[in-house]
Image (cartoon, rainbow, N blue to C red; front, side, top):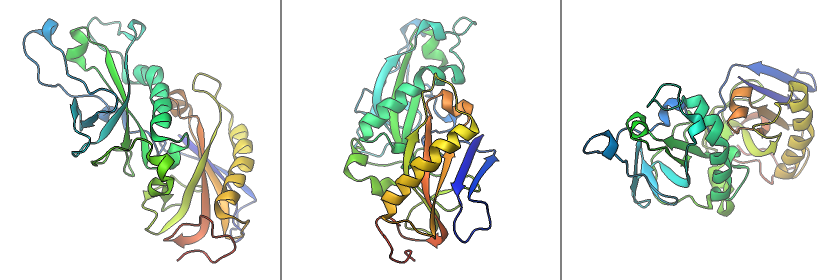
Length: 290
């Protein structure tokens, strides 16, 4: 579940502030859990001799294979952090790795922090770049290996990584607009539908507002809404360069499940009263882009 809110557009019949509840997954920075596990690499010998070759920080992965590939070649994930899963995460059944939700709660907040540092912006949820996680599969786990790797990927509208070439280290520090998220739907009313900002869209992501820590209390809906209303309003004003009747702040916030794995940001959008194919960044009082 995710939630949404907004300050109504001047042309809308809605009340001045609208909070809605909808069944939706977080749309940015989180891929489906069952696509994050590595598949078996090439192994020889018995279980005790098995060891998967795993990419190091700064190296790249292609698809589900945890082995390194050249980042100049086509790949899907760039490694940002490496680590070892603690014994406290072990399954109660001998030789069986812990469940996905257990691993994500323990590790993914670290991956999100690593992604922010690697990409050059703590606001990367407002971009098409997101954090990724792979870890030891069943055979590796049985052989005693507990590795995990955090990474970053460029995500499509469904949260899956797209193939790309070249590194995205510091990509957002160099050009955030190149990766900015736009939505074909109104975030205030329904789940955002990520589209290129050159295509018709109803909203642009303008930034994020941190609402707490993954291991802390999840704010209530009114608390999320109160924090978002002022903060997102300020971000939209700064992004647009003026207060306008045809552009309004809207926002989305995480449910408890995504909060616990590190999605503690409120996403702020500049939502327009008509579809545009250009950015409202710095338009001031000029007409909306066509």
